[in-house]
Amino acid sequence: VLAAGLEGSGQQFIWVVREADKANVFDGEERRVELPAGFEKRVGERGMVVREWAPQPEILAHPSTGGFLSHCGWNSCTESMKMGVPIAAWPMHSDQPTNAVFITEILRVGLPVRKWAETAEVVTAEMVEDVLRRLIASEEGVEIRKRAEEVAAIVRGATEEGGTSRLEMDSFIAHITRDGL
Image 1: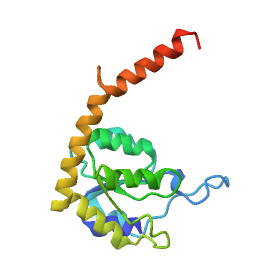
Image 2 (image 1 turned 180 degrees about the horizontal axis):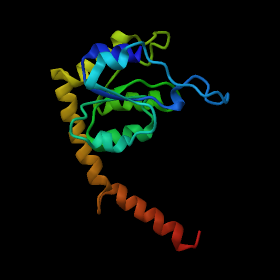
Image 3 (image 1 turned 60 degrees about the horizontal axis):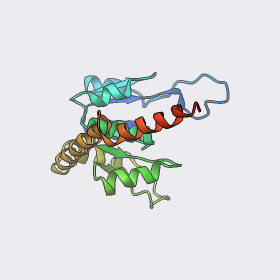
Image 4 (image 1 turned 135 degrees about the vertical axis):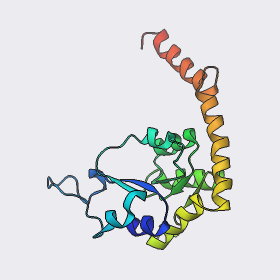
């Protein structure tokens, strides 16, 4: 589904396929994620498949990164928000659906791959293709990217010297070190 959606979208991409993306990583068997036959050849230079760890913050910081298809774990959300990169939200479980709503409906810095409330709905290649085109190559995407850049400026300001997050962290560190905790 994801391979077909990436291919059909016509967008450039980096797809990180890791051990954790395989079926059962705890059974001791070594597996390689199988992509559709000829996928890497068909996408050519517009698509890069990385089969190991990749430096996500550095990729998100690159000026050519136009969007991020994410499960919406909080670390991924905050990294993307700090870099001003809009998110195609595809949550799976735990805090991810709530984070996806925050990203897509409250902050409006992303689009859902599918509505989370439609739990019986299976994500299709066409859904992935559509959300990537909308996010990266449409007027709607331009507006979302503009909003993502505004949110990024706020997030970066909060983490700089004198920013609210920085002040709270400094206060916390002072508190726990004050009494030798």
